[in-house]
Length: 108
Image (tube, rainbow, N blue to C red; front, side):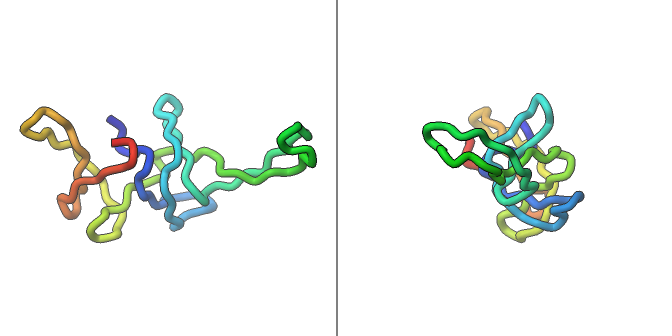
């Protein structure tokens, strides 16, 4: 289980977008990268297609390394580390180290 999952609210710790917050749209655990809504915009040149006959330059979110992201505690709205806690039924859940609040993303 990854410390950052799809649907988590995160804050950027370093880089051009330092201090900005966003929601994780996609996670690539193999490359340790995540795409965060509104963070790290990159420009891509797109050829004209039938769906987009104009083509042109498109801006979209690029991946950010997970070491530059930190989960936001849902209770205190502060950046927090997470830990895994095993429940009685055997499931593992992520818990904030600051408040002890359970962190749930849309992937869970």
